Image 1 (tube, rainbow, N blue to C red):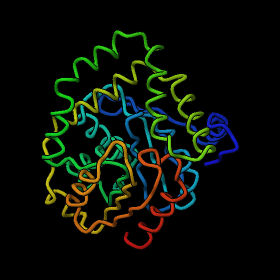
Image 2: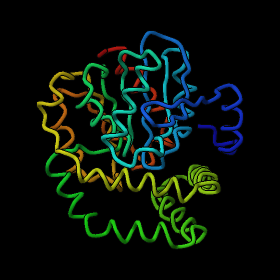
Image 3: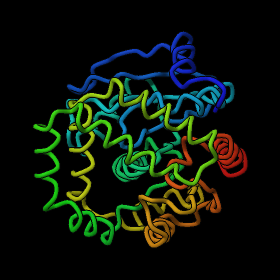
Length: 289
C-alpha cells in the first residue's frame, strides 16, 4: 500500500500491465484477471464490495511466485449456488485443476461454499475477516436479515442512488476511525474513488448475494475434514462485522487450521495491512502446503 499516491493512480498503472479479460461460462459473464507465475494457483474471492481490483496490492506482491486468478462476480447469478457452479466452470475453462481459495469477508463465505461443493478443485483455504456458515451463523443471518431484506432492497431500487453513496462512504469510514491520520486519509480516498463509479446495479447484485447466505444449508466440520491442516485463518482484532464469538465458531469449523490473531485495524485490515497478510499467506503456503 503506497500512502504517497492516490488509489486511482496506482490502479491506473496496474491495469496497464494487468489487463482483464471477459468470458462467458455456463451463462455467466466473467470479467477476470489471470496472471503471475508458479505451479500453485491462488484464487482471490472479493468481499461484499464485489470489486476484484481491490486485491491489486496482493497480486503485485505475490505474482512473481504464484499464478493468480481473480474476478468480479457475474451479474447473471444473484444466488450463491449458481455463483459457485459458474466459478467451477471458469476454473475448468482456464485449465486450473486445483487452487488455494483466498477470501475476505463475503469472499470467505464464497470460499467455504465452493470448498464444500467442489473439494476436487480446492487445495486449501485462506479466510480473512469472515465467519463460518455454521447452523448458528445461518440462523443469526436469518434473524438479522429475513425481515429487513425486503425494505433494504426497496431502498436500493427506489431511493436516488446519489443520496445513498455519501451514507455508504460514512459507514465505511467508521471502520477507520482509530487509524493513523495517513491511513485514514488513504482509506477515505479509496472509498471516495470506489463510490464515484459504483452503480445501483452492482449494489443490488452484491446485496442479493449477501441476503442469499441465510438460505444456505449450514456447514459442519466434517465437510472440511479433507482440508485438515490446510486452512489459514487471519482474524483481526475489533472486527466490526464479525464478533469474537463468530471468529471462535469459524475456528471450530476448520480442523487444525493455522490461526493468526492480533492483527489490528478491524474489518478493513485486509485493505491497509496488506504487507502482514501477504507475509502470512506466503509463510502458510511454504510451510504448510
